[in-house]
Length: 470
Image (cartoon, rainbow, N blue to C red; front, side, top):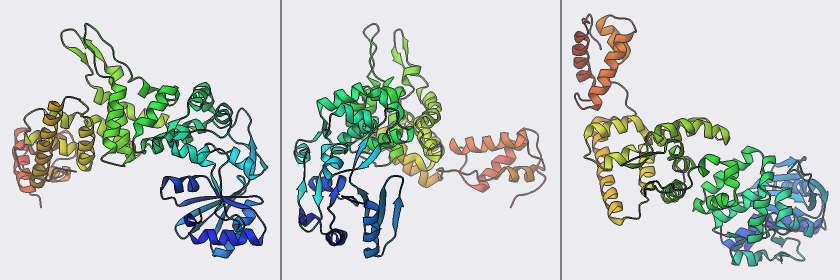
């Protein structure tokens, strides 16, 4: 293992361990990622002694600042390109109403036992007498080889003590494409109720990490199959199932949503575009109707879905800022490019889409491409060809008409000056007519044409020109 300890921080830690006659180990994710061949910039160090004192000694040697968190018994420093956290070896016990442990000093074995999963309990000795020796009491290496998530101790006890570990198990399975051990799955099912003692912020943080994993459907399938999703995000569970009347059914919107999510992940790492994929059909359950002679409809699900977004973001403690507004906009508009791709694409329709989507048009097009989940190869080919036509039309219209993030070529102040009127209904009427005329292609998107149009429309409603505009 010595070849994996080339960073200069390990040399300093090793020398200090010898000087102070302390056993010190690298442990957890950094060690795990060595075997997964994944880069890692976070190093956890466990000390058989006072972790804070040792961290301060290391910081002094490296001439860097150290941050001490006495309440948690930890200290952290940054050196070159890594962040190193120190803690004394400890054992933990829990009260039933809290996931905050009662901590006592412990041995390395105690510290490894308290780790969440075997793959995170791997340790490498840093004292010169054992430097580079791997300590793996729970066969974490075997679990890595078999792509398995297991707990060092009884999983029922592990998940009851700290219920967030249930979410973490699912998150690691999703990030690494690992399987959760059957015993651990049953332990999650039996401990679901314990998730209520975990803060919503911590739950959502794990949920976002699942969403940011390479194939989020792995995590969501675990969340759904264990019953966890019903507790933390019931609106998504409502998408599940197919109802059949008179031999007519509809696609399962839950699994369709997971496919759209996986599809968009192939094109973007943006968390909020991924959230738009999750929520694009979220209002299908409340808008589902059966129309005799026609079949199932979900009329207006895009409008209702957009209205549901703020409530869902608030419920999950997601940011209620421009990120939420982006998701809301994409949910609202997600049918528009699809409709365009199924019909003759007019300049007017493209201008309106550009006007409403603005700088988010590329994200919208990614979402709409991801929304093509049909298994019919002919339909897929047809949709993709039409999408290419729509994208080219978007490019051509934007280059010609500059509609994206459109601002009117003349303002309300210009209109008031032109006709010598004060702010009021007439100004609003004329501004709307200018916008519609430009979007419909009746006049070009320039100031001179807009002034001529404004004069004509003002005269139609009885206004007279009293001044010129600059």
